[in-house]
Length: 151
Image (cartoon, one colour):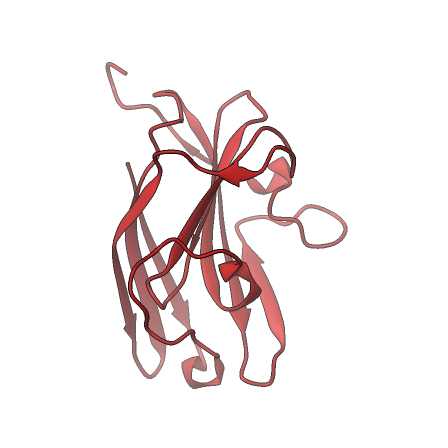
């Protein structure tokens, strides 16, 4: 399980947030304001991409390596999505079950796509590799989550 909390501060009213919807698997959420996590087993090229929208829709994909072998992630589910926008801060919370990953250390990239009302998009991450935006690049996976004791 992975519990996520994203907080955006600033001119929240300038952001184009997706309209509320039923929580369900939905493709192409990354095309608009969306919160993402990329999680891979330490030392392997394989990873899972999570997309969670303020609408409460979500998606999860398995990859064998950098942008290769993409498929809907088997057994992955996102639940408890809570979206709380306010005047100067917006927060999204969610929990994801990741049964396909080993109970070992995880390399993690936390990323966000923000779409403004005028259509401008900005791409946020803990780290950006050199060159064009590419959240799938393992250079973005800068957070390390240690396996729980006894795992």
